[in-house]
Image 1 (cartoon, rainbow, N blue to C red):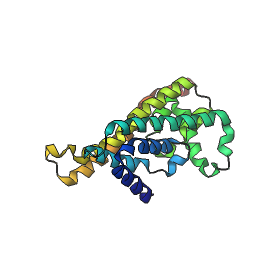
Image 2 (image 1 turned 60 degrees about the horizontal axis):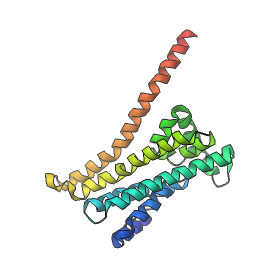
Image 3 (image 1 turned 135 degrees about the vertical axis):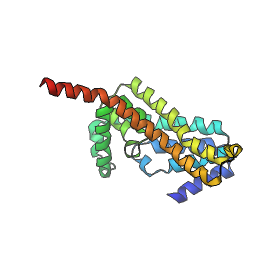
Image 4 (image 1 turned 60 degrees about the vertical axis):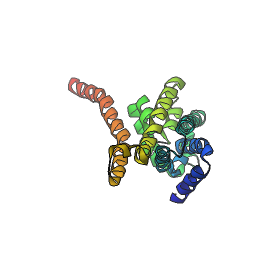
Length: 216
């Protein structure tokens, strides 16, 4: 997997004008059902953020293509789930990922719209939640809103750590060893925000269950 990531980075470095489409395709496959489990998009995009920070890559096409690719990948996964229905879980190409779909079903059943919005940041359900949303016939409008918002948050969240570590923080006299720690901390921010959002939106359900238990 690291060899593939190195190859992609080498292509981007050599052919900078192709950086946008390359990252767009990578973000697309990262968001596509099951295939996303095997695509090294996260590490590659963080590294591309470093190239942007060093001034070697234009950030505008990278950001635009990555957002478009991420949105399209989730949209296709959602469409497949909506078209095929529950039978998609038993498809011969997906049988080995039943646990991933089980987790995604539980996650979606519990959080609905929020699961689509935050699922992109959570590795175990990232490429399976959109399929589940399609299978249960989540309305197109709310799905696309969550899909677009999550892509607009996900792409900069991955590019920013590398961007900062790629040279823009040198003006503040940071030591070199601090860059890696800061990049790691920034990578954890989306996960922390996702966890806090889940806790926040879960509280009304917990209160409702508590009240129902007392009434019973």
